[in-house]
Length: 516
Image 1 (tube, one colour):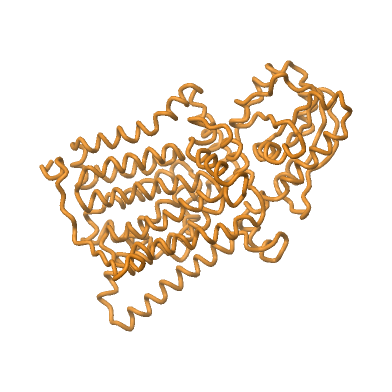
Image 2: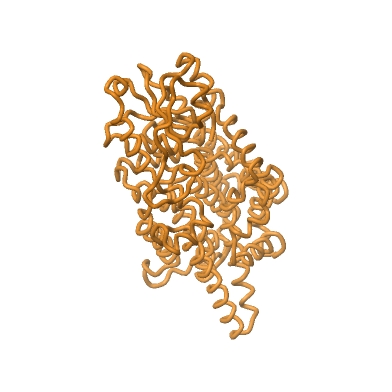
């Protein structure tokens, strides 16, 4: 190892820095303007429908802060709790941080192009290419948003390391990986790509740097609270992930992983191919080749492991950055007339992608409008945002119809986390008890003390309730005021009133745990 690399002395490359006459017109400012525009769009459109079923689970977990949860690490519920503190149960407020971190990803994509030597045009092209995923990833409060930020932060800091040759950047790399591990465990695939890229390139010299090991220590220190939680709970998330992965394979969610990558890149595909050319073939990209492997290795691993297509979405910004820089350099060799034509074509393609994804991912039309019907056929999330207040209203009406002796020890048993989260969100206005359930982290919170003697059961089948509970009767069906068919109205619409479990509560609860 060189003395320069180990001591932290480093050299800056000749990456251009176009600042303009005012900080408000600098390269970074323009990246921020693009990013802020996406936040504004999300804030304006985000309150159109209602909470998604996944958001209802996160909202409930946000009320029970912990170092870990069955379905995910603690970062997303933490930001959910922060949104509750700042905005209450506002739908727009709950989604704010997801939109914000996705916007930060747009800025990071442009900054990656700068690290690779790109001027303003290349930075703006790279940022614009990242906007479609920002629009989709920031539309809901979900761990995908925070996981994507961790991938992009890691890629950006690796580029900083490779450009400056300052090994102290390993601390930032380790911190971003630690944040990723606390957001979604799939960042280990990116780490595999980073390590493979180091082995296969000159970056292998950093294995001998103490700063590399400091970076590993930083990641593990950030991740330690969740490791401890997992150890205390029998590493339950491994069981969850195994179950979810088997389910995804069984129902066919993973069978088109490679073809569906085109859905992630759309008309930005030429930039992706140009990015691969930049990292693996172009002489100017050789020093950054490790980053190319950070895409290729996760691509191969996800293909072999049968991952869902969107798992790789956060790897494309580093290709957009490389592709935009190579494209900028390629354009300098063309005649001026052709250069302008290519630029117009590139921007037309990127803007078309933004418009298409916005039409599908953003709630722009009212329910049952022609726009809604078009978008909801492609984006199934929309229909899962409908009907939760009506469900809880129905439960309250059922409760009010019961005799006083049944209401005194009443419980609401929910079959899935959307139903349980909805009851806990909208139920207090009706004086309903908190929902109990066997799914994910709801099971860990138990069935209450004293346990309920009468149950309103939603989301479970006739066969299940007849087998496990006393004197069940069908009393209502789920509905929504728009007549929209979704999981609640289609797959498990029946609502029952039952007595207690046929076995004791502890015995029933012990076998009631399941994942979804």
